[in-house]
Length: 178
Image: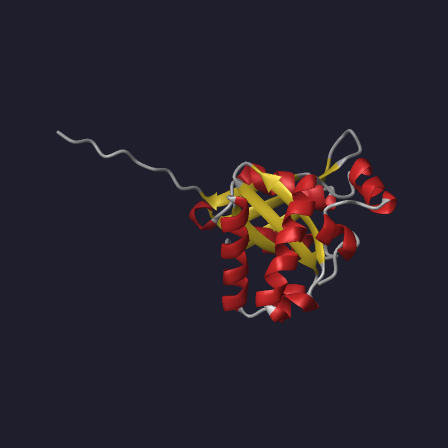
């Protein structure tokens, strides 16, 4: 498995000056190092994992989003992906979501929101010369991720400002008991 830091540093736990600089500049985080250590251990029990490239991890609330190079998750079958998610989740204590870091920001957003179905993606140019991506989903109930987490992860990975809209909103009607 390829990592953004030296494999020797990963095994020893002591970073070389080059990798230490990556940590200080924010290119990698302590969370990344912890995830990379776990992945290097899991690689022994999950051989196809050695064909993948780790990009980074993003933590939001009780969720951990682990990003791999585009196309790398296809090298793991669904059972192996589920086992990887489960083992990472047990080791870190957070709900783990595996994602591919696609070059296309719209494909990345689609993978982030899956299994929710996207009705439309619009790019909105704001008066302050910034842009925002508005994603309209078919049904709010199919969204398995917190909308704030979507905005945070899309911003951290792709530098996008994302806003979600829903064609059908789900409201939990309270039943009255007489």
